[in-house]
Each structure stands twice: as C-alpha cells, then as structure tokens.
Amino acid sequence: MTTSDFISQISTLELVEALDSDADLYMIDVRDSDEVADWQIPGVHNIPLAQLNNSLDQVPRDRHLVMICAKGARALQGAQTLAEHGIESAVLDGGMGAWASTYDTVTGDFGGATVVQLRRRGKGCLSYVVGAGERCVVIDPSLDVEQYENVATSHGWNITHVLDTHLHADHISGARDLVGRSGATLLLSPSDPFNFAFEPLTDGRRIELANQVELTVSAVSVPGHTEGSTMYQLGVSAIFTGDTLFLESVGRPDLADQAEVFAHNLYQSLHERVLPLSDTTVVFPAHYGAAVEVHVGQFVARPLGDLRTTLPALVMNETDFVAWAVANVKDRPPNYQRIVRINAGNESLANDAADMELGPNRCAIA
Image 1 (cartoon, rainbow, N blue to C red):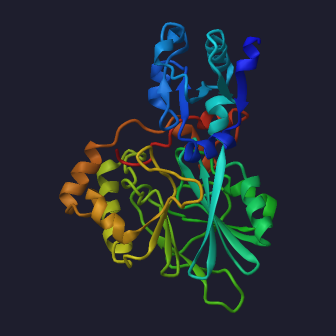
Image 2 (cartoon, rainbow, N blue to C red; image 1 turned 135 degrees about the vertical axis):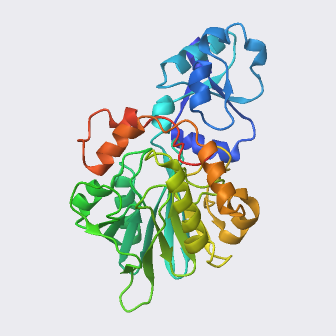
Image 3 (cartoon, rainbow, N blue to C red; image 1 turned 90 degrees about the vertical axis):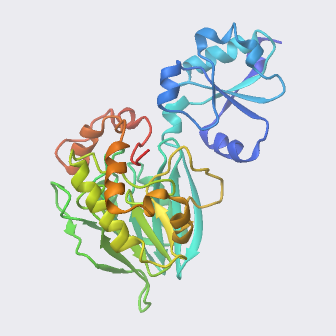
C-alpha cells in the first residue's frame, strides 16, 4: 500500500452530515493556533502542521479523522504525515474557504406559511425564504443567490420581495443581485444609509403572501444594532429578528461608533417591540455563534418564552443593560468597514468578495 491509500477526500456537505451523525468523527485543524482561535469549526482539535509529526500520540487511531486547513494544501500535508505512520484520514475539500460557503436547509410550517431556513455553516449566517401559494419573500440573502432561487423553484414560488433586516457588516448581502435576477421588489429601511434605489419600508408595512389569504409579513422597526434595523413578523407565529435578538445574546450596538446611544435604542426596541409578543412566537435570528448547537433537520430558532428565561440581557434594567452592552463589545467582524461600504452601495463588489467574508460573524455581544 502507498500513502495515498490512507488518504481520502470529504466534502463540506458530507462534513455537515457527519457532524450530526458520526460519533467517531475527530477533526484536526493543522492551521497555526492563532488562525484556529480566530475562526474554527466547532469541536475541532488544533495540532499545527509543524507540530504534527511530534504529536502523533495525540491522534486517535480508532476515530474517523478529518484534516482541515484554510484551503486544503496544509491539510493534505498533514494527511500525508499520518499516512506515513499508517493512519487513515480524510482531507476537507477546499478547507475553511469552502466551509464558509456551505449551506444546509430546514423547512417547516408556521402560521400557514412555509419557512425555509438556510444556514451558512462557516459564517453562522441565517437567511430565510418564506412562502405560501405561489409567492415568497427572501429575508437576508447572502451573495450565493442561486441558493434562494433553487428553494423558490423547488416549492413552485415566485420571489416577489427581497428584504434585509439591516445594513450588514459581517457578510455581503445578495439582496440587490437577487432582485436584479428575479424582478422582485427590494424593501429596505431608509434609516440605514443605503445609496441605491429601493422601496423604503414604513413601520407596519405588510406583504401579502397568498391571494385572498390573510397571511402577511409585517415590518417593525427595531433600531439598536443599526439605526434601520427591522424585524419581520409572520402573523403571531414567528419573528425574523435580524441582529436585534439572537438565541445566545443580542446584537452589538457599537459598529457605527455610537455604542451608548445605540445600546439605549436597542433596549427600547427589545422591550417595546419584541418582548411584548407572545411566549409562543418563534424567534428566527440572522446569525448564531459557537455557543449554539446546530443539527441537521432542526431549526436554529426558539420560542420567545424560552429566551426570556435564558438570556440575562432581557431581564436587565436599562442602565445595567447599556453598561453591559458597551463594556462587552469586543473584536469586530473581519473587514467590516469595507463590507458595509459595499452593502451600502458606496463601493463596487470586487473579485475578492469570498475571501473578504472569511471569518466569524461577531455580530452578537459576547
């Protein structure tokens, strides 16, 4: 046998399945420790490539080993090192670069509509297609717009409206591209500084999904993470909260360099617009962090009543909330200023868009 007989490839989609189903999965990231500390797949074990040959005692021989790096080259070198010692492993095809653009979906019914949640695993980005009858809306699309077109086609829907919950700072929005391809109406809050044509949202704006059916998506202003942050209500069944409320925290108020002012706004939005809703209303956020477990076939979502009892930020008074929010904002999303300029229409989309987005979303207060 040659060393190549001990090495196989695994795609990112196969890894998504394995993360949820393979109890023997053991991931080894051979990037340098600072790279892994900054951005990693949850559950990974870090053994830098330069140390691997002297760290073979740390490598389990009875597990399904997956070697990971930024693009795949170092992982292959690591797999070759293991193969020289008779250890089998699989190399993650495309590495973390490919992981950043890997999606899976979950579908369910809420209040008479069908909700499809698209999870961009490497970024912790969540976006949605909400449809009924022959129509659907897309909420917070990423740049891979074919994902949303495929969902709509598979359900027999026409995309009539595209919505962003706010001016994103962690990833490039696909809203304008999707509108250009579908002919849909682009709805955005004029309170965020977008510099291109769109139909401005007004508070309470309703979008009818099905003919002669009282099934609507309603826009509700929730400033705080950004001035124009908007959540969308699907009747009384669900809310799409953008970066206002996550499952593990709330949105950071500092990206516009007005942390204290925005923190007061965020507190008021949560207490005046979100928390008065029913405990049974399901919260669908725009992101999730490392603390949130993600499973195949299960929504990243929770009833509002559950969050009331698990998130300390929701029971603080305003003074304590603002002090906590301002004190706990840390590292900002990678390249966020340039991403904001692109999403606002002040800079053209460049060829390095995929690389610019690499890294964690960092949109929540830690």
